[in-house]
Image (cartoon, rainbow, N blue to C red):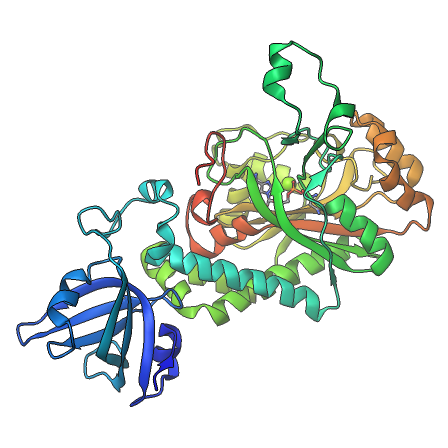
Length: 464
Ligand code: 4AD
Ligand code: MG
């Protein structure tokens, strides 16, 4: 009897001498003059391929050998043997071969190696079969496990906040509308939109953040986090913005901004360490093929404290550093990516937490400072990715919050349930949001955020 086994397991501690059943896709095939063929089999369970040795005596050899082109899917039953060849511990000597599906060598887009990332984006359905995107899938998976482990081990409750919402968390109006109204027909009739006739009876959108709903749970079950897709209809075509991205948002009652910063720092360090410990081969690949500094950067983050400077201090640093920036720096304006990266990459050479931002550039829910000018906001800036975390202590004082909403042009009535948290048993609390894809940019050294998510959505792009 043969035993079905994944390539990763076969290579790691496969049962030498046993009859195994391996299945996957052919990466390459090479025929020797001595009448046998070597097939490199990959099943996605790890970076490495498993070498299959197919002897002429295997039934159907002549017919099989023509079908074993790159991309074809096969099953092999054979003996797992210690390999005499360099660079691999084991190989499989085939006794039985099955071809599940062929892949026409003339047409298969991944027949050749070395395609550009731009080209691979156009075949996002096939790119997971390449080394880079296979490694990305596994690193992304490990990162998500690490996120859950971090919070679960600290007793946080995982909360599912809604995807469809009628409130705008960031108050920035960058939301995708969700509707079942027949827009084409209404446009033809030049009719006014009447949202009471819409599916939810009012205007609804895809969420930009689960924070507000997470706050309601933090004020009930205590420390919690939400983790899911979020959507932003901002028209920014950069290498760091997606229209659909994943965000993890913890929310903690009785935390002030300092507690929040401490948690964010522990969190980032812990999830990066987890990936280094669990994805050594994939991370080695990124270091060898994508950016030779990725391991150094990750280890540096794991082993050092983050710098902490106020927004005001950061502006002074940027104004006096002598560096030329495309966008001018001035107190009161939002930092651009070039400023964030200068601080993390050149000035501090490690992650930096900036706090106490001008209230005019931050969201309504952030706690107002006594100075009347700043709010208890924090952003974590890292090399390569720039801002990976945005968070704050929340405004827990009802009157101040209502005033802030009005200042931000929001109608407090629309947020009646959010205000109820301040009416009934309000507590100081804080939280933050971490962009999953930004962490992947940092970890893998990939330079375009479209290449760290399986199916990127950006302005004018939602194929697949
Ligand atoms: O700074 P942001 O907008 O903060 C919030 O949404 C808060 N409600 C979070 C909270 O306090 N619970 O977004 C948080 C993070 C950013 O730091 C960035 O890493 C990521 O989400 N992010 C994006 N990632 C990819 N594409 C985009 N368009 C992103 N916008 C934000
Ligand atoms: Mg932000």
